[in-house]
Image 1 (tube, helix red, strand yellow):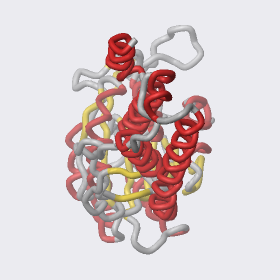
Image 2 (cartoon, helix red, strand yellow):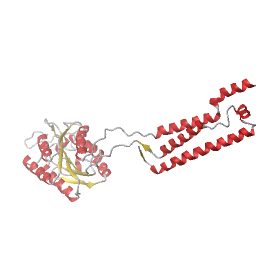
Image 3 (cartoon, one colour):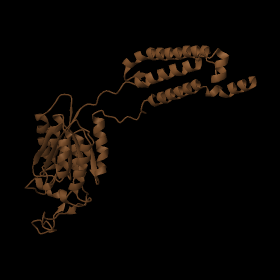
Length: 346
């Protein structure tokens, strides 16, 4: 048993003493009252109980009630095992793809909307001690620097739009994103933390995949862990010109541009970076990724039952004892026998 306010335990003997003195004082008063009535027998006929008998039951009730109230006030509760060691702090850089291909609607309502809602869930999960937010298309752009004020990032996420980058194209500079993330973390690095990059993209990258994987190797050598979240389907979806009311986006040959999806490239990035790849078709699909990031920092959801708090039980016991004391003081429990004795003698 442990106590939230152990200093109040000094009141235990004091409370017992006060209750004892109170009962003794009332007993002595009852004895004087019996003498004033002309003796114990006369007082018993008038009150229905013996005023000279020592109230042992009442003394026990009042002392135990005082002890229960003191224990409740001291915050007595069940002792628990030693708490787990604190989680390792995680610094998270979130990079959201806003290239034109992310407007494809092969996932509902679109790749970008699913990715943005997933970012919202990641930020709201408080999985990282510090967090940064970047957007990227043909190049990366740091929107929020690494900060421990997660509310700042939460403010920006609902307002994210592809139009925040004025010039976008169908490709994605994933290699530049990786180098940029290393620079952002290095600018505000701290000892003992785990730097993590989370890339949300369809993987349709500029340049050769070898260039992207080389950048992933450089990031991993700098200590950056890489998680990737792929948004899209292998079949892809046709693209339309932004703000045109549905005009198809055409290639130089006249065919409509179809957004691609390279899950293999994203998966290889995560493998090199010591993280994991997750495919997203709905925002809730990111919850598994969030769970992995929690384990990365050593944060494990507790499955133990909450320790027993006896405060309410102690209060109920104290009230029951005080009620019993009041009944004993009133003589109700002895009323039937006393009246029968008086009637027989009359």
